[in-house]
Image (cartoon, rainbow, N blue to C red):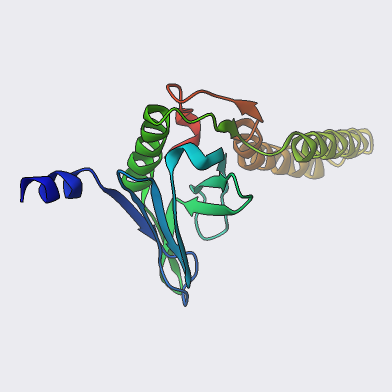
Length: 195
C-alpha cells in the first residue's frame, strides 16, 4: 500500500483544452517519463528521450497572457502544452499556477534523468530576424508619416500617429522582448516565459 501511495504522490499532472469542442490534452509526469494523451493519440516518453523544449510567449485575441511549451521527442514527434484552457465560447481561462508547476517539475525530472535535451526560448532565429526587420521598416514608415504630418501642419494627425505608435510598441514590444531566441539550462528556467 505504501508503494502505491508513493507512486501516486510522485505523479504531477496538467490538462488543458486547446479548443472548445475538442477533448482535453492531458499530461502526467510519472517515474517512467512524460505520459501524454492528445485527442486519440497517447504515449509515454522517458525523460532522457525528450530531445528539446522550446518555451515561448504566445498571446491570442481571447487571452493576452498565454505561454507555450513545445516538447520534442528523439523520434521527431512534438507536443504543445499551453497555459490556457477553453471554458466557454467566449472565455479562455489562464491556468498559470498549474502550467508553471508542471513545466518546472518537467525540467527537474529531465535533469535528474541526465537528459541532454536542447533547451531554447522564443521564436526561431529566422522568424525573429524577419520580425525585427519588419518592425524596423514599420518604424521608418511611421516616422515618415509623423514628419509629413508635422510639416504640413496636421498636428491632430501627428498626435494620432504618436498614440498609435505607443499602443503598438506596448502591445508588440512585450511579445518581441519575451520571444528573443536563446538557450537556457535545466537549473535556470526563464521566469519571463512562465506565467
